[in-house]
Length: 113
Length: 111
Figure 1 (spheres, rainbow over the protein chains, first blue to last red):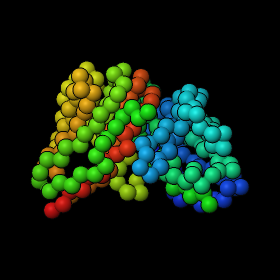
Figure 2 (cartoon, rainbow over the protein chains, first blue to last red):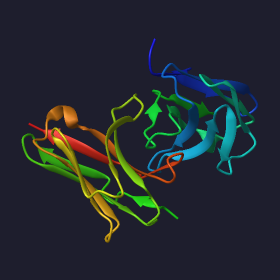
Figure 3 (cartoon, each protein chain N blue to C red):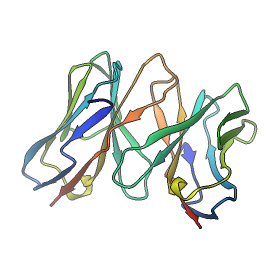
């Protein structure tokens, strides 16, 4: 398996549920990212992990909790979300010493009821 | 405050003609600019990039032009093909570890 893989592809959850999104990259990259894509808005950077350390947290609410156990895996733990959190969540990876080119997964479509 | 702007939400072009997608930015410190293409139900895929020290980069049917004085870049696709129909995102990089994206332009290439 190659590239960046995200699971699940679709997730429906209630506001009181706890769920997690998973991302796995097989490209040997050393940086991983979570982006949020809402309708008619730019892709919003949420978190950046470089060499498994979180280097950026773009003022994301604490109901989103990232975890990077190693350079190939990234999780986004979700807890007590709001309906406005419904969006496409995209994981990406890159080489930190590169030109900023990101390789994206196919995304996890989240619906919060 | 949106640092990368794509003011045209959609563009429709006939097959064989040139498609021109535009992007404006506000931060003169951006050092790399990239274009991504996104099909429905897929993640964005990298298309072409340009360093801030250049004004043109070409790759097959795709050419990106950078006008730093105007803080403007454009993507030219020629000739356009139906398979080019997708959403195109412009992105700018600051110190390579952060990409800031525009809202995207939906390109439709019709026969």
